[in-house]
Length: 402
Image (cartoon, rainbow, N blue to C red; front, side, top):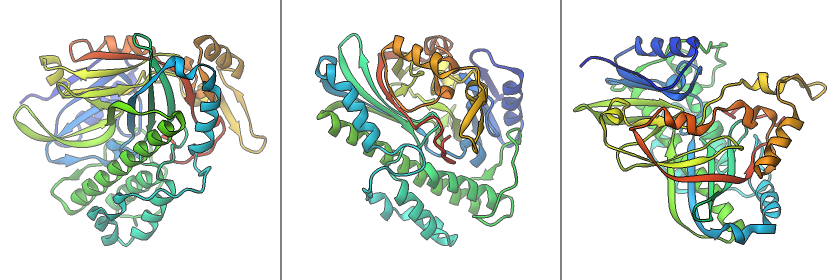
């Protein structure tokens, strides 16, 4: 079968070049660059690379299992009215953003009895990895990770959504296996790896490939558990129940069948969307988010049933916020001022807690424009508008944020 190379939307040469490097490295069946794509570590964010018998830990990336959960509650927007500021204050108080934990509650979970912990035991690192995982389960982190309260304008129903992944546990899993693949110790200090480096590949039937695949799946289940916990906390704050949940990863590797062959689909910042499957796609804090459903079509099959995971960044963090001087704790040279951001958020009607100018609406594409590039591969089922957004503070340090 001829390799499939599918590109949606417009991209700069650097992103296209990185995509083509991925397509020319290893046993590649095909690839997709989604309309929200941009240059990333080893593989474009918004990129999908499909392998025959191989898996790429650098392609999956450091935030294994990063994704979204969204639920439709039984509340109407009128139920919140004057309560929204207090609700957002309580979310910021109860949910941990950044690297620390704002409450002393330790979250236990059946996940810690999962047989795939044997991978880390065999490597002699299970105690450190389990301790890290326990300490951060249910924390959101920083960067572009969020907890949102949204309203569906056509019904007035309130939705909750979140976005984060496997935190430090996933980060250390990724860095550990990249170290092992390069002949270093699991917890060894990795050299300064370049964003441009070609994908690191493991044969799936090799010992290290099998161990990584199992560890990745465990990190994915960990991410699911964390997002479940945070949604439950917000439901409790709201005193609400829900009747629909949409939950998906967008940094992960899946074993799937395409064109009659089992393959490994590595999605880095891309949403799996098989026919009938639902997905949540978040826009910026000043834009819509949507629930989408996959459709059966030639276009969908050629896209390996994948779509965007967000609106796509068009301005880097440093461009937006400027360079940080950690001695003076001030930034300088940013294109987006706090005043510009505050005005935009006020005009859109969002109750905001946390977030810096590097997450302002100005740094992202418009979601409708991105979705329009993927016509024929999905249906938009629900359009949602954010009314409350909670993120880590502007200068919160978190090594596991993206």
